[in-house]
Image 1 (tube, one colour):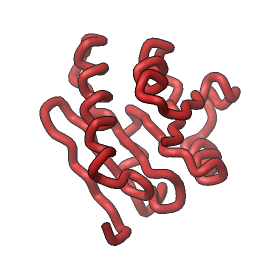
Image 2 (cartoon, one colour):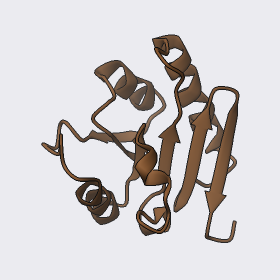
Image 3 (cartoon, rainbow, N blue to C red):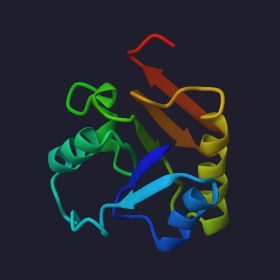
Image 4 (tube, rainbow, N blue to C red):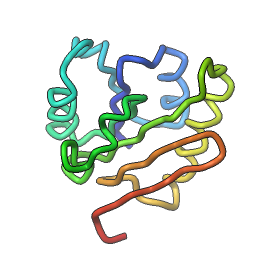
Length: 122
């Protein structure tokens, strides 16, 4: 699966995705740090990559339609989360994509639950 990680994720997070065999690009590595949300969404659309972010602005499918790209995953973390919790949440949704298509869908990942919103037929 092709993912683009937003600028708020460190290299240890990148390694969790790579360990799962995923194709990862980061906003920082591509020089998109500080870019507008629209520019980031356009990059994901052009590359057909699923955006993984903490930014709730991407939860508005009228502004940022996940069906135009490889999908959108928003991690909703508690205040001062541990690396262990972040890693568990990422592994949880990576495990779930084995049975539930993420392409074109909006996923909200929270501790203990994952909500999937799709405009496409599954």
